[in-house]
Image 1 (tube, rainbow, N blue to C red):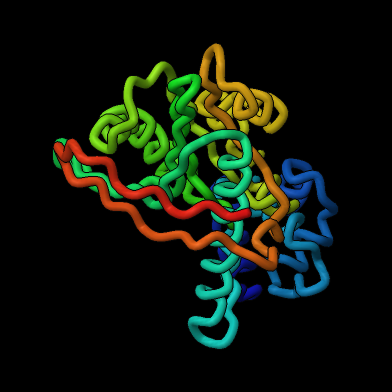
Image 2: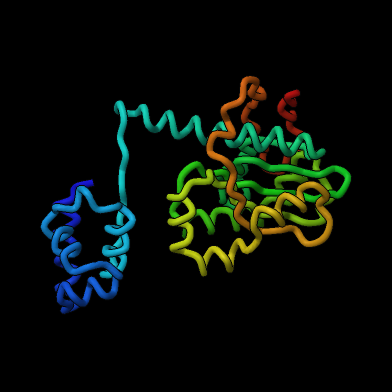
Length: 252
């Protein structure tokens, strides 16, 4: 994060609103000297959360990019995502669900894949899981999970899972203070689209009767650190296929 550039942006946005530093300090609930330090690019000792609050107060948004060993961080984040997926698959299978990982689809011109698609053979319930190790672009993510939930019954039928009584839409996120804080910034939107929380989701997954939940489930970000990970493979569901794709092998 370029602190000088952030400071210049805060100053420009503040002046655009015709605010004094005192006005911004009051709006962001910080002291005026803090505003001065941020605008001068002298904010190295100021908490990122405070800087973000100041940027939000003037109508901006703060993006912090972490880099490590070139593409090494991307691989590390992918590993965190894969770890959560593998933990989720093992948890679902233990509860009696059949699971497909990265179920690809191409329906009515819409293409994509579902991180985890699960079907409960006893209750004929279906669940769509979107897994995120870091906070996503919320508008794109909410639109994506809604679209996948809408297409899921057709994808399930193409794969031999039918009939479907209900479809859950669940965002599974790594539990971190950063993810919780950023999700809270979109609290009203998330609450409207995904109102259920972890306890309700877990209860429904144990016995999926009644209305299928749509919600957010925070899980420990180190769930993937297990000795014996299940052997997962990608599943592609051809459009209109009547055959049932293979189910990835279960883990003990």
